[in-house]
Length: 301
Image (cartoon, rainbow, N blue to C red; front, side, top):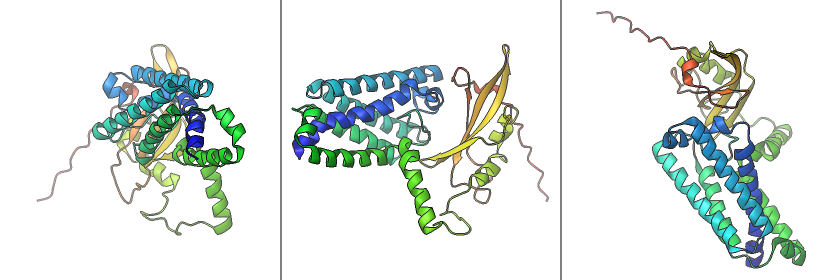
């Protein structure tokens, strides 16, 4: 079984790196996700952060191609393991210095760095180390032992899918919908702190926040989309901002605690990002309206 693992590891790593690398390199949301990572603090500029994220994506795609074409070569597997170690160090630094920042692992999902992020990085390290010891090409191993190879590839697919939030919509959401159809809604009638907070409740909380006051002159639509990721709820609206060149359409993104409601907090922490729909670049925050300071009321004596 061990030779099967090492010989098929290049194929598994190649697929994983191809998916995450293509998301960074060609994804439409790369600039948006990069703006919420610690790379902005390190590089000092959102454009440089997006370029760095796309460069990493290019490296991942190149490694995926090398793993597929030369699975018995030591260098691609060792480079994959080194990349995984680099990811782990980056995640540790980001978690220690900016715990609210996004991972940027796939440039498709936003949210704070958590156990899934470290697990994905660890999987890359282990997969790369195993791939470096491969002595038979993956296609030869599959032809030689098809049954065992199929079992391993199915198990690897399940593990990778469980650790990849991008695939949730492909398997996890349909599974949840099927469970609800078969067994009914598992949530209590009135969702409390342990229940699922409705999206409408998050929108209500957002519209009472200072962040909404600052961004409302730019917003031009009702809620268009929403998604949850590792503790955050992201709400997307359409908007328009104007500069010397005229009006430009943007996506206005708000991220707030997905468990928060007006009953649990009056001043939620909200992160706002504006992404130009035409250039896919982060729009400077100075287009937002200044929020008036709140004057303290006199106390009765």
